[in-house]
Length: 206
Length: 182
Image (tube, rainbow over the protein chains, first blue to last red):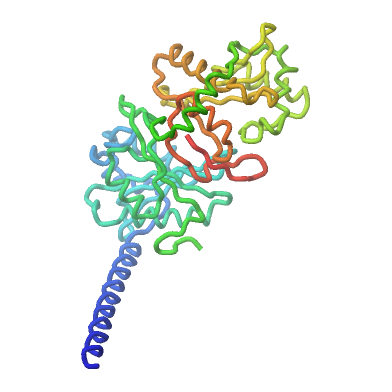
């Protein structure tokens, strides 16, 4: 009898500890998300934008080359970023540390949007990109009528970005061989997708 | 691709090979092909999984031919008889923008001519032709709706490798969501 009582007590303690741990993890995750916000860009964000747009480590897997001239970047912001239907600054404490966009399709492609994102290297490894992607997916499905699929194409060698999408709940669908030419080389891309009906870990989608 | 097939599948394959595959030729369309074009372009059984709308009248077919077929970068009539009348269509569209190394293939065969290996032969011939004509081409891909088992089989037999199922990839006719497969 006593032995049984001790056994029960042990497992209760264990479950309490794991509950506490789960709470701590959940709180940390929420804090992460609270720290990260998405908002539209403004031309006044130019200097912050230049930080990652001029960094070769950031642009390594992008089709575009790092910016060297601030005026070129200002023109890009004015002509592409500001008028874009879905382009957001990834902000930490209100200041941009990266960018995220969803290119929406038309006609037969109206059910899908293509996600892209970049983050300044100083902020890598803290789950900020994952948090931003989760928030973006939640928002874009709510805001865009008829959108059912958000997809992302990631270079096979870009393991960091693949991890971001996996943690954000995307499904890896396959490798599209030689599907992109970037910086003079043909690249294999991994296709990821998040369908509006996919259940996510945090139950993001209502 | 063939590694996982059992003995039974191999026998069936041999039987398929022994079926006479017709000699097909590919040639550019002319507007005078409109009557033959109508045979498949107005047929829902053929156009069901297509991104193109089904035409209903001869005028619509003529407009479609003038606007899309004639100026197309690479579109061919599939002919099987000596009189050279088309029984279908195969087209290859280069990818947009900077991706000159990539193109997409599409095809349609008149319903009465299904089941004779015509589409497979046409796709193989078209693939050889474009890889030769466009030396910068490295990848030819195709998207078929997951339920379009006939077209998927054509692509497999023509030597295409299945890469992925892209969920909710296209909005096809009637608002239904197609699942593509490259």
